[in-house]
Image (cartoon, rainbow, N blue to C red):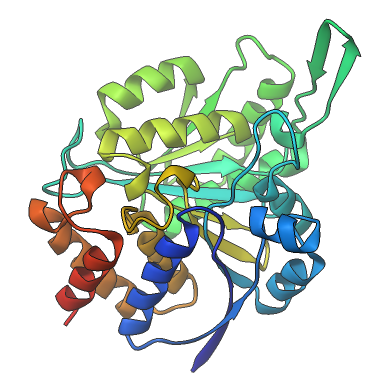
Length: 333
């Protein structure tokens, strides 16, 4: 079987880490026909827009995407391509598996949790204005429809993966209407999943407990902003963003991407760690039903990461992006 998949290399180190992920996936023998398109800063230069229509058309046709990190200017320039993609394609669920690797230095061992983040609203809806020259306003949007949808997704995913607990994160003690609505929806959906433990946690307490006892958590369910922050915090517990994959999922479209940035300072220097991109590829392979190939890559990565000398420089090793990729492929044989 041949899979038609959209490939967006991204900016900065994106093309390097995505190329590494593609190389590893192709080494499994899965037959993928990649449709390469350009978005982000490179597209801005050539097309005058960071998100050309042909990118959206390719995604809507193929339904599955492997995407590299895209640069978003801070405070000026075009708005986030990632946010525009999520809105345009209704990618309502952001999924961030957080799993520690043996041998990699981290604050905790035996971490294995998944953060499920609502992906379309909250403060990231981007509704903001200048009231006057000294006052800016951002509006937090929480709807019943989106909240129930993400809550149901989190509980159903927990059941499908044999996860035992869902922890809903909120700040309803202060934001009683918006976060209160999200919490209300979580309580409602939890009643339909009596086989799964339901826990409520205020976001500041969650931040502390996640640092102290991440092994206590299984699936963490959060609105957009809290989920974004907690995802990066959790990645720090296992060795950094270079080890954390991600996915943005809609009803029929799935975009898989490393969660780190474009790291322009090390682009084209063969220094980037491609593990996050490779693990995003693993998520993609599972999504299309290629579980054996996904397992092969995961086992190879675990084996390579155990050996300090085989790791990339950000993890204390000596290998460049290309050399690390070669070692992973060799470990799959």
